[in-house]
Every structure is written in C-alpha cells, then in structure tokens.
Image (cartoon, rainbow, N blue to C red; front, side, top):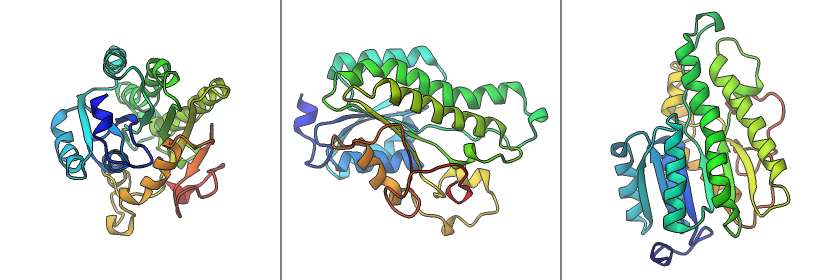
Length: 258
C-alpha cells in the first residue's frame, strides 16, 4: 500500500502497528521509535488532541501515523477499529497494549466499586478485547507480534495497590495464555516490564519521588523494537527493561522494577 512505500527504512519497515495509550509517556516514545524504524503507527488514545504532538514528532522523522480517538472501555469500538484496520490494511503486524490507569491508592474495603471496575476494565479487560478483535488480523501478518506493558507491582503483595496490581497480574496470565494458544502460529506475544520510568502514572503513584531520578521513556524503546521485530522468537515472556534491553526475564517479585 502507499503508506508502506513512504515509510523510512528500518527494522519495522512496512509494518502496521497499533499502539494504545499513545498520547504520552511510554506509548508516545514507542510510537515515535516505531515510526522512525519504518512502521506506520495507528495511535489510539481517548482524545485526538493528546496525540497531535506525537503525530508532529513522527512526521518530523519522516514517519506516518493515523490518529484514533478510542476509549478502550467502550468495547464495541475495539471491534469497529479491527474492522477498519482490516478494510484499510488487510492485517495488523504489531499490537502494543500500553494504555493503563492507576486508580486509587487505598485499602480494599475503601475502594469504590466504580473505580475498581474502571481500572480492571482498562488494564485487563480491554487488552482481552484487543486480543480477541485483533488476533485474526495478526494471523494475516507474515509475523504478527503482540506486546503488552506490565509492572512488577502485580507480583508484589503490597498494601493499597488493589485494582492496579490485580489487573496487571491478570494481564500477565492473559498474555501467557494467549502465547500458549498461538505457539504454533507465526504470532509471538510477550510482556515488557519497563521498570521505573518517568511517566505521569508513576508520578501519581509515587508523588514524593524525584522525577529527575528516573529514566525517560525513550530509554526503554529498544526492548519494544526487539519484541516487535519479525526475528523475535520469544513467546509468553516477561522482559524486564531495567538495566538495558533484554535483561533477564522478570520472575517473581521485583520491587526495583516498578
């Protein structure tokens, strides 16, 4: 297609990549990197306005992007997006599930049910909906790749992290189950634990932390490219980005990797 022909050369040249939570933080950094590596990026976030700066940066490196206003908790809209991607491209090469929400820092008994549902719906259920809707498109790609952002918080038994921790540990199991199901296909599905990175969600979760002590999101994009590339053979793994790309896969607890 014309979009693919105009992409710059790179490891992801000609790929179609859907990135959720792409308006800031890790999502924006990865979107820019994917575009610089030659992918046409479909940027999904709740409002297009938050994506315009990302789009400008992508165009500045010679890349191309499509902006999609999408509240991932509106599950029928995910099916509509899948249908639109099929009509326009006929496939999806890369699915990056990055969108996430912290919710509240509170004892379990004090969390309003509506907040619990909102966090679990965005962090976990929306990713299941994405897998369900995008799997047929990934199967049509020469080498479909699905990458999801997780956190060691889900592997720590920490007080007050209820909905966020539950949703992240659930996400990890979800992706591992999907990886087992597609093991004999050309698709590969993995998770990245980016570790302590300078993001708005991190600032909200740790308000007393000096943001200048944290790595900027751009420093973890190498790992995303590795897992999105056609030559990646990993499947069902949790890759810890802390300390450099492809540090030992995250296992068990890992508080330093929040």
